[in-house]
Amino acid sequence: MKIDAATRNIIAHTAPVKPKTFNDMEEAARAMKEQDSRRDSIFRQSMEAQKHASELLEKKFQEAVKKAKETPDTGKPIRDFDLD
Image (cartoon, rainbow, N blue to C red; front, side, top):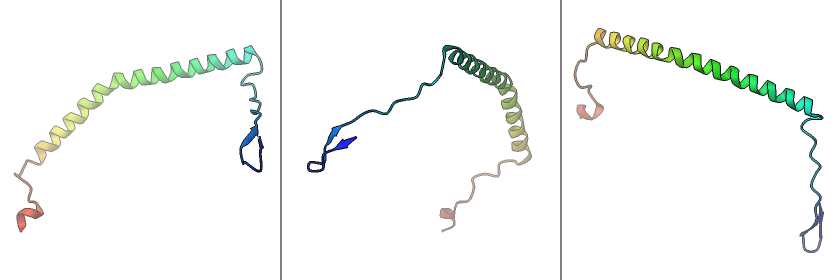
């Protein structure tokens, strides 16, 4: 980058050379295959989690119902405002 001292404007600029991401096509193809396998693995894990999500939600709901039955509702809670 070249800057004029008097006007403080850029006179010339040369963009830096970007290095190649891959040296050859075989390396790029290998990287794509690895990325595809990683993506498939993450997708399979997500599918397994979704299969069991409804069971987990049902267990959480049953536990909440059980807890609600053990501690019955005593009415409206007393607020600080009510005590004044």
